[in-house]
Each structure stands twice: as C-alpha cells, then as structure tokens.
Image 1 (cartoon, rainbow, N blue to C red):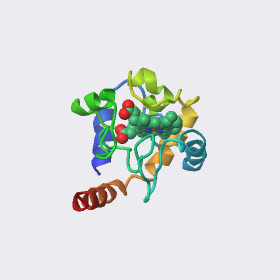
Image 2: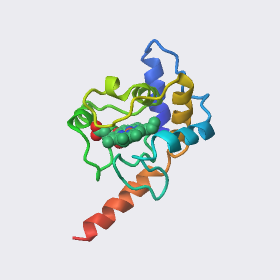
Image 3: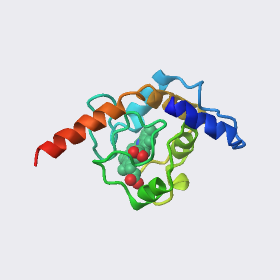
Length: 147
Ligand code: HEC
C-alpha cells in the first residue's frame, strides 16, 4: 500500500509521461535480462547478499541507498538525503541510462536498450517487493549480536 501511494502521488503530480513501465512488463523476460546483465553484480531474493552491487530484493518503491550494509557512492547518499525513492518510473529511467540519470554513481552499466527491456526488468524486480523488510531486520540483528 505504501508503494501504491507513491505511484499515485507520482501520477497525480502530473509528470508528463504516461506510466509506461508500470503494468505491462513481462517478469519472465525480465529475469532472463537480469541473469544476463545484472547478476554479475547484484543478488535478489530471500538469501541475497551484497556483492559488487547492493541486494535488490524489494527495491521497487523503496528509498534509494536503503541497504544498511552496503557502501554507496556520495552520488547515491546525496539522493537519499533528498528523499529520492525508487518508484517504477525512476527505476525505469535509471536502468535506461544509469550514468545520465544519477551522475557519478558507481554502477558500471550502460543501460538497457529498449523500453520493453526496461518494462520487463521493472516487472521482474517488482516480483520481490514484499521480502526486504524482514530480511534487512534479521540481517542487522545478527550483525549487532556478533561483536
Ligand atoms: C558492474 C556492476 C553492476 C552491474 C552490471 C549492475 N549494477 Fe546495479 N548497482 C551497482 C552498484 C555498485 C550500485 C550502487 C551505486 C552507487 O553506490 O553509486 C548499484 C545500484 C543499483 C540500484 C540501486 C540500489 C539501491 O539500493 O538504491 C539498482 C536498482 C540497480 N543497481 C539495478 C541494476 C539492474 C537492474 C542491473 C542490470 C540491468 C544492474 N543494476 C547492473 C553495480 C552494478
């Protein structure tokens, strides 16, 4: 519901473009793209761990740079201070051209080639949306206990 509110707010805010990637992506095609382009740096799912890039479980609708155990670039932490959230729209623009969308960020990826790829990727990322909360909590709990 949190996410729905965000999207509603974005739409109501009247940002010219229609929410092209929201509904019509194909998550299975997105998974194939993820394996090809993203898995080298990112893990996703219940047992995902940070590697070169942060865990992406639940990233859709989440604040940027929200993984407490990952060292983000200043470009990312500045965005976080502005309250930037990964709405589907923001994710789509970022994945189409990461370096143009968030200058000086550390993700070395040229960008997905087509709107269709972007839509499919966002649809795939969206299939993991509910798990983050619990996962981050239990992760940080274990960390605090092992001194
Ligand atoms: C070469 C490694 C690499 C590849 C390939 C890569 N990423 Fe990243 N990604 C990163 C790094 C590093 C960051 C953190 C950037 C920073 O701190 O500036 C990041 C950040 C992100 C974030 C923001 C996460 C957050 O916590 O705010 C998303 C979403 C993301 N990547 C998605 C993807 C997707 C989807 C793909 C495949 C299309 C991909 N990345 C490919 C390394 C990579």
